[in-house]
Length: 61
Image (cartoon, rainbow, N blue to C red):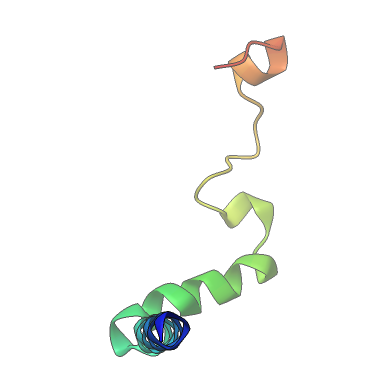
């Protein structure tokens, strides 16, 4: 009995996550993430191409 309930809850969670992932609200985010491997490092918003002064000196934050 309890295993059937757990199976049903996990199946519902799977369908909820699948629905969320394929919903139209997230399509722009997934399209942007799909293009990340194709971009040059200079174009990435997180990397300026210049080493940080902290990173270059070995200081960790």
